Length: 124
Image (cartoon, rainbow, N blue to C red; front, side, top):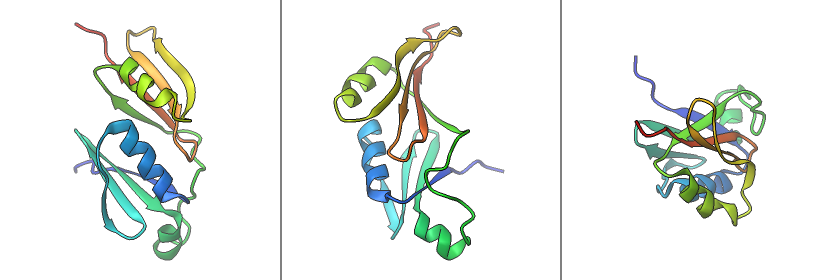
């Protein structure tokens, strides 16, 4: 079995695509109306309109209702990401902070309120 992607369902696909493209610098692939994928090194973030879920999955997922999952992205320079997003209206939950286990971490919320952790590991 191969883990293929994480899909986030949204009512505002364009805002979510813009957020993750700005955050990562990676252009989204839009293979179908109401659906996009952003191919990160090692993982795919799929974004789907809630309309598609209503059409094909009878409301199995609900947009902007996540209260448990955290999307995590490892970067080499958390402070550079903070500087890039800080002045753009991004909801910063926790500014860059050194965690007890050594990671440097930045917590954000995407336009749907999903928690996003940007982190770097300590140098060995």
